[in-house]
Image (tube, rainbow, N blue to C red; front, side):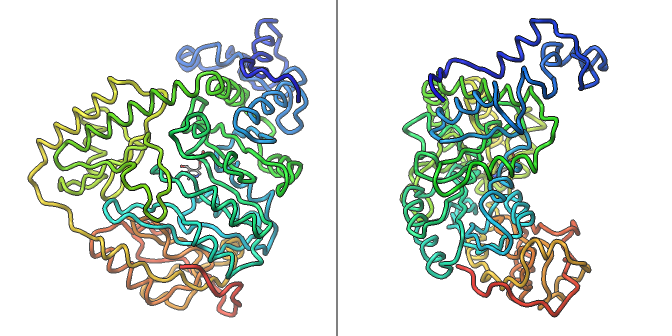
Length: 502
Ligand SMILES: Cc1ncc(COP(=O)(O)O)c(C=O)c1O
């Protein structure tokens, strides 16, 4: 597409034209520009938002077969994010990731993935029937969090599984830790297969040189981004970017169409259009301000007794090739509080809502929407909490315990087959030798010791019981207390793969 102007917002403009023409709505949705809606809700949200909540017709284009303003908006996004093709999505990055997997892999094909992938990846495996070969990410002993994967571990996996049809990595992680993506691209492309990237936490990367390299700029073939998580679009709106060559864009469109609603929200789609313009026009300046705020916040938090907030000083460790400073992992184990307790105190006593917490950490994400006053409020709250709770006991030190994870077990069934089998709940201790239909993990580090389709081993049961006794969270099963695990009813199943990369 020629003559693209990043200042333009073709989809948002088409919606404004529809509104300005005072078009009479004999189309769905039923609220008809808000007239038919509960008045309290309408007055709160505002009629402007309602007036662009329309459906598919020529003037506003079709997400399934874009040829008008959506096609142009996607072409503008492709240019801004250094892709050859961009697909807008309204099913979160989960939907984009599942479409990414469906467009690259077929039933029975092997894919190399980190063990700590988001559940949407497992959903993608279940939908496609692809078979995972897991690679362990590196671990950080202080925070208990997973870092990223190394090019060496990907290389080793490919040497052992040269028939793999693709590799998927998460970059950066939830905690902002980036892998050496450029080297990983080289390693993967040496095998002539595509690299897929879960770039949920990276739509801002290409707009500032101090941030880790973005997937598209590193040469990856396809990546899913949470535009809504990190930059200025609305929740659920995401983008899937494609580089021509190893991935067929027509197959990507078909996969997106398979998963998408036929009634996508134009409010969400338009928010992608304007988020792209905002970043294309002012992204560097906005990121500069965000990064300055984040660096200042990190420095101040590190000066508070009992708290620490890791950063670029970890660069160079295996699995820590780059870092997004806007992710503030506030480690509180030296204060004698768990991350969950700290999150509760911040939320209830200070009306400060972090993104998440685990046993040792609270994660606060900073973005272009945060202000100096908000950072001041966070730092002051942490200072007050340190003064109140300091000098209590340090939480037990589980370094050794969580570092020694059991070997990745034998995969007996593809995740899809395991999820479709009849299952029975079994007491964990009695389930050794059975095939798990569920995940099982301890937090931290939140890396599964069991995934659907894998054989339950004595080591795994022992590890889980030891971690439980040490006070770590055990999660993943339907049973909230994780006393029982769903196991596949059949015993006579053959292994589809016998070796993982540990
Ligand atoms: C690494 C990663 N990938 C994918 C997703 C899914 O994104 P969404 O919530 O937009 O579906 C998340 C959500 O937290 C995530 O952290």
